[in-house]
Length: 423
Image (cartoon, rainbow, N blue to C red; front, side, top):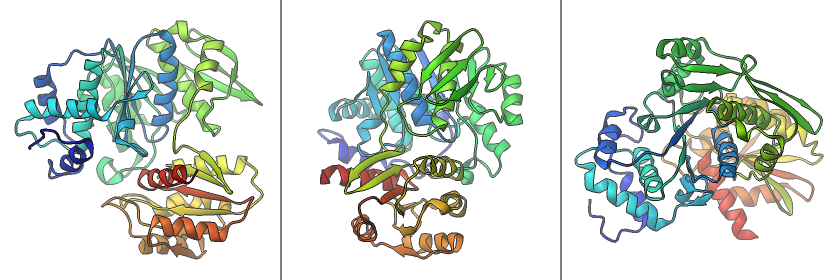
């Protein structure tokens, strides 16, 4: 591939053509290229896996660890607006030049390896972290765990947020099978946190199989909430009078509790101080997670895209005690459970608008509208573009109403970009 002077946008377009498969769940190619790169590894590596809540958990862990003064690198995916969001050091996104330099370094040693877009990005993050002398790397697993590219980097500790049905075409059609894939981040004699109180059998059996030190919610750590505060209890530490994390939704307390358990299990108990935790969690900001923007009507943008995430989104919308009507703009990819996603939101949404997401794997708007209508017994409008969907939503609303944009990163990102440009 000719890369001399290639800008980032052109690089990303070319990366989409390097592998015959958009998703190729094997580690051998990444491991070979990683060895050829011969990068110095960060002192500590955390893996964050699970179905939902990974981005929030990464943001919480990052904010807490930054109080140590060490250099913290984060790799997340997918991005909302800019590819640069995926790679950041000390809260600052990598520049185009840093990412391009990393891609060029990978290309020098890639040889004939047909890396996927995600694999290339994972390796680029490690190159940037090495160049920036990152002390701690927080790596979000993209899909599954066992064969995800992130799993080629050896972790010191891991967190599995929860297990629910998603990416079933790739990971399996039942909770136990998906949990087995997520459990692939476990390592012998290394701590791993499971954040949900409902622990699949395969999580327990895989921890036993590899000899991982498993810490589970409700057994090894727990939390409770009372009004405006919450408390946490771990294996050796207890915290009371904690303030709610800045991210919206009661479910974020469960994410926060698991992050504290991970910090404790990793031997960083000095961070488990009420003032330190409150300060770190008060600074959280994450685009596309129950994000609210006021622009005449209230816009709510959330990247939920599976039934479990939809249920959490519906609960958060319900808690807001909104008096006006809610118009939902929705797009989804073709491997998603439309009926399961829409059902929890039915009592919160007055009007539905379907649009085709900006992805080759998107469900066409007309087909999505048919499935939404069949599930809700309400008409679902079909928009030919995001602009049309936004215009339609504005025609259906008045001050005091809200517009929900949800169902896919590939919808929320472009919508958020448009809303920012209108300010």
